[in-house]
Image 1: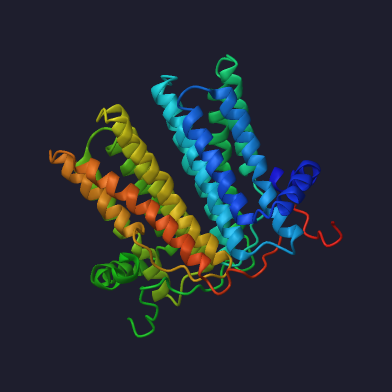
Image 2: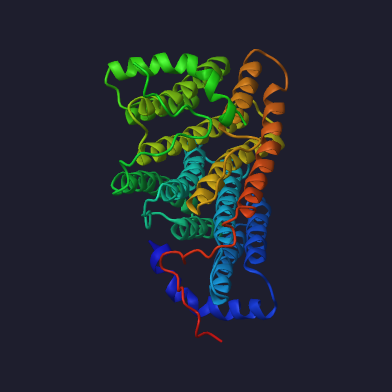
Length: 219
Length: 219
């Protein structure tokens, strides 16, 4: 949802920073890698060590920073296909680091009930699968825009849950993870239904590399 | 690697079963969902409870069973684009369940050193990202075939590690996970390089839905 509607209001902040980056001759792909590296570093260092408020604030900041690379590219005529693939892949890596670190903290610091650890692992896997269905559907030519829980929602709910927990609000991370686990499973199904409803859904696809394609003489 | 070369030898077993499924009027998508459900069920039930040999054997069986849906589809004229998207998504879910269950078992049963738990989480995330880079690259029109650690290798190494551990072979799962973690990180980079070398890499891509595309009047 926010992926579709949240970018416009963010432009107020993002565009001036993008212009500065252009002046400093920083390329979009360099921005992608730096913001991903910072986000992963913050998640892996601050969450397992219990610095949850700082982790929430900095991860949120670097995730917002992640919008700048695309804006820089479009200000210079447009983003490249490789740049978009690199940016999307880095988003998957940072999502994995965030929920991996949260799972780690639940086990080794929060001494969480096993059910909550399971919910966190569901968030970790489902966050990857939600994005995978979109990419795999688009590789088949489907239009796969939108979904209940996309990356912006995922980051906001998890980081607010982390931050509130850091401030001592009881069960904040528990509620956040259960809500995300349920919402993420819903979104996986939502996107598969989206793919199934595509006008191209029933079109034939080529056999995967290495697979036998022609069975016309098979009885 | 095996994804490209392993399918041909497997046809000897897969094709007769596929013909049987056609006789029983089982559709490819039903096969996809059933084999995914069985694989997830086996992973989540047997691994956390320490039934590692059974988990390895049955997961391997159901994963091989997963080749049948595509063969049934091609025997009936060809697979559909939605069927391919559903099948690939179910592969991500079963990969997530497998490495989620292994991580769980490491923490709550094997009392693994934290570094090994970290390696298992790396396998979990990297296995998703390896497939994501391929799908995202193909959505941009790149050819993204092959890679050091694809799904067949991932399953074989992890299931052999599990099975040997179940037989009492010391450090079998440790070696398997460390090898997979290193090989999977290499494969993520390998596939990003593959995307970067694509002849379409530098082509412009459309702005993501909701993002401002035209900055031609921006100074």
